[in-house]
Amino acid sequence: MHFRHPLPSEFSRLAAEFLGTYLLVFTVCLNNTTKGLGTPQAQALGIFGPTAVACVLVVLIYSLGKISGGHFNPAVTVACFLQKAIDQKEGLMYIVVQCAAGALAGFSTILLDGSENTGDGNIVGPRTTNFAVGAPLVEFLYTFLLCFVVLNVAVAPATKGNNHYGLAIGLVIIAGGYGGGYVSGGAFNPAVALGVNCMGLHWWNSLYLPIYCACHLAAAIAAPVALHIVRPETKQPQEENNAFTKIIFKIEGMFDPDDTAEFIGATFFALAVQLNAIANTVEIADGGAGNPAGTLSVGATLICLSFAMGDISGGLFNPAVTLAYLGRFHGTGCGVGKEKIGDMLCSPKEGPKYLICQVLGACAGSGLTILIWLASGVFPISPVGPQSNYTIGQAFFAETFATFLFCYVVICVSTTFTPLKEYKGLAIGFCYIALGYAFGPLSGGVLNPAITLATSIVSLTPFTRPMVPLLYLGAEMLGGALAAVVFRFVTHVHEYGSGEAGTPEGYEKLTAPDGYKNLATTA
Image (tube, rainbow, N blue to C red; front, side):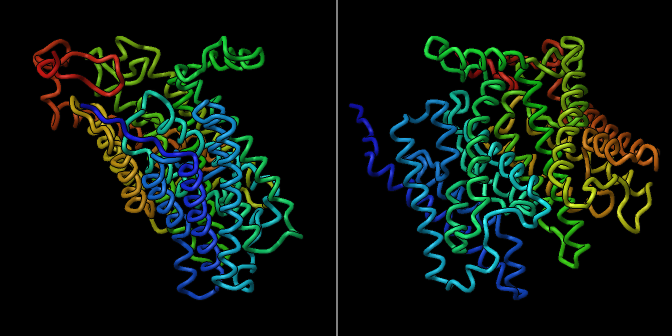
């Protein structure tokens, strides 16, 4: 006899959204208050503010997600409604409950810490007036990323049943909370913006509250469009949509899913690298401690992107990794992604297309960074090159070895006969974090030829120090090639067995993007 699990009632779902949103916004407000107290301990704790918020979001999603869906954000609710994951009535009730919880969290912070502490500097809006354009743009971009990740890991049918959805969503806060938060404050949630506004009691200075909320709403609308491009199967049946929606669907169909996924991933990766680097440089110039969590933020970005789109394009986002994939799969007739990038003999166009999309994405990320910092009076993009007290030769070795190790880890966890499932994104992101902190002080820890090329172009480095970008590009591509060589001829020779063209006996090639299947275990 089978028993059907009872579904949560409407009251339970609304209560879960209220509780989750309240705890999330309360955490944000308390961290904002703590870091503004001015003591050395408070300043040190302030460094971990986005990490604290990300952690509470992760545990709330895992705790309450099976009851209400774990939105805790009106923008996420709008994105899920547009994707028909929630109906209109329930979506409106969610939004009302979320906003009420956000406001109550702000007032609760006043009761806990007093209006003198909570009202000091806690205003919704850009950190300085120089970011009048940049702050709303940051709010749009990272709210889009948050909604896009939610739709990919928690709503799309192809990813149903995974256990990493909470981590993927929560880590977006770390991804955007440092470099992006330095510009806008890092709300990415209308309920958070409302709660901070209530905490500061700055109703007389609430200009940016509706502006931020409008950016969040626009991002929530854009996220399903991007989802339909990278996952065409998520589109709703044509007959159920009006003429405007059919036009949107036609435009969406003009883009290739794999290439678009690589472009989006490279864009946000470059944006994270550069925003965090700028925040570090400006903070040090102003006598501060810099941005010690910058590498953590970039690694979190890579984890989110890998979880969201790894099953679409392979989640490469890096020409050096692409080169490692091409070397690993050469002559096997196999590859990753829907277009099977890997064996240039079978798919000669896919490798170059990936490389082009990754470079264009990095250039787009650089352009967005310049736009965000346009009115600040600071040219944001620093040229690539060795860090202080290190030579170009030392930087070349650092970039080669670090890129080799990164690419090697990626192909080891992604392209073997038994690739990692739930932890692949974590392995890739943690590897980048480790290498960024280890080699960043020597070479800057770029490890990505697309970012090196884009950064060099906008900073005019080829005209001032032409050998530096050439050496960096050479080091990074050499690292990717060495990763394929070591994988293929040293550590994973058994992956190239006596079967057909690199496929060992007992295995066959898969059309899915996650490796091979063992014929002995399938009937």
